[in-house]
Image (cartoon, rainbow over all chains, first blue to last red; front, side, top):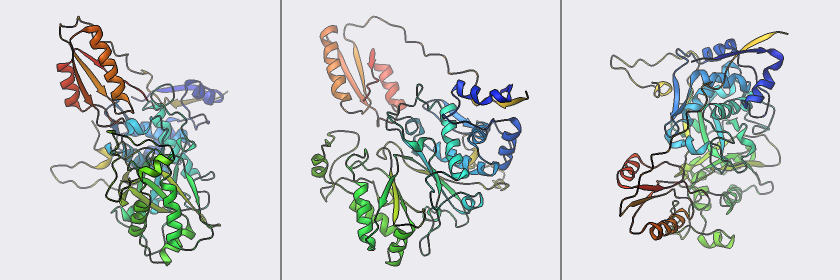
Length: 368
Length: 96
């Protein structure tokens, strides 16, 4: 049920701050008109439909609530289909939003947009794509987190127990820069059609900048990155996590020119980021015995930092420079939460013809 | 001064009512103490120490331990049902 407030316009920001409805930054007032425009951009028929629910909390987010928070975050209406897809992915059971939004580890909700809609709505995939300056990147990520705070209770003092959090909890969203052929964009690597756009959400620790500026050998570059992926201080190291590996243009070009396929890069990073119990012990890390994370070495005597090659989410982005890439580990081993992907339904796309028996479509599957 | 109407971002009904505690009953002669290991480090060891302490205070008691699938997941429904059916007292909620 939609509830409204009528306020002096000059008092709106302070009212929202006083109620704890913001992330600490000012918001765009969610007027009924702005919210309606936003809903229209995703061809919403019934704004009270739940996008998804977190069963353990008995809480969910309706399309209207998502639109309210998209407006508050500063989204243009045309961003809303991406916001909806991000929520759909977040509510997938594999993402385990119950924990991923509120754990002491302070995960950011990382959002990777892959496909033509990213470019159409003006997302940044190039210089500073993880930083400031692009409205779509910042506000799409912010909308998801704001709604998680206000609607799902993921705020300090309620359910969010983050010891530190990380800056990505305000917004961590960027577009993939489609890689040069023969590499394929993430959405195609995940099995979607070339013309599709997907949103992948991942619960992530903070971003590490990866420097490799003198070595033009792809294997050497990847070996440096694998070393970052097995840092003993990362919670998921040795416990089968996932990884977001963002190759900058120089590093991707070296790999492509030297004949590396994307599958080969993922395989190499998975294998070379394995770590022995001795290396962990040398860094002061105790090996769990009978713990939840199955820290039993494999035949090579080592433990997996990422569970499999498919747990390395390999994307290309960033701008040219001296030679930088970026990496963010999953905040926890994948037995706790995993990345999740949904296709963006473009504005105006007709609902599928399900025939006389009906069907479940992704954006309606949780509706009551 | 101009006025503006906005949609409330949160439900004015606020959070649901606080869950009431289950009624306290006298323990039978040989109570069943349930322990829920939430898979946090050392949770199991701590709970077993607690169970031992309770055994000394209560006398003869049976201890039943269940383990959550992982720290980030709730008990499986059948685990919860089984515990509710068997145990007279359940200890859970161990933090990091």
